[in-house]
Length: 216
Image (cartoon, rainbow, N blue to C red; front, side, top):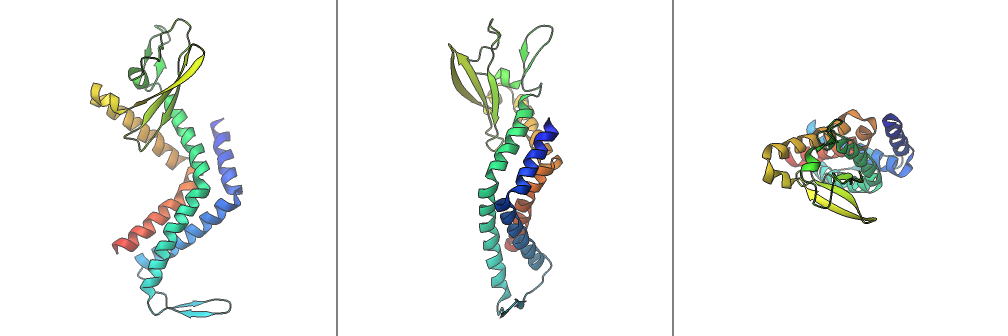
């Protein structure tokens, strides 16, 4: 099921013509910027089909390429944002199913896990009806992440969010544990899934190009 979902996201990205065009332009400009900056290459002429252009100040061309790379990154993000959401939803869902986040002991029927420890008072996991909140997760730059509890109260669903910083007050070790879990699932998603690599590689190339231009 997981492989099918990943394949579907990747196919959608590959078939998205607007995303493909933005991705191609961003990769091309960023690659040229990196080569010209890092390798010390200089460009004095560009031979087109009709015109021959001569640059008296090649360093200005680097500035133009840097600005173009930034603008193309923004445009690429506009087209890619919906795929960001799909990938984020996938890895956060895996996180919320980790036993260290929330779990119920098979023999004692007792709840345990980080999300259980910081659950709001309305989230009655031990209710006789057996109904318990639906858990979701919002990364929010990791250090400020929140668990979201969808709680059924008298046939009405209320939403409560709890910041993981609440764990810091109770136990610094548990806070660092959940932060480590968040980073683990995020890195696994970025490095091991083909659709994530496909989506995020243009950002990486753009960042490297701009940083080289600013630092060299």
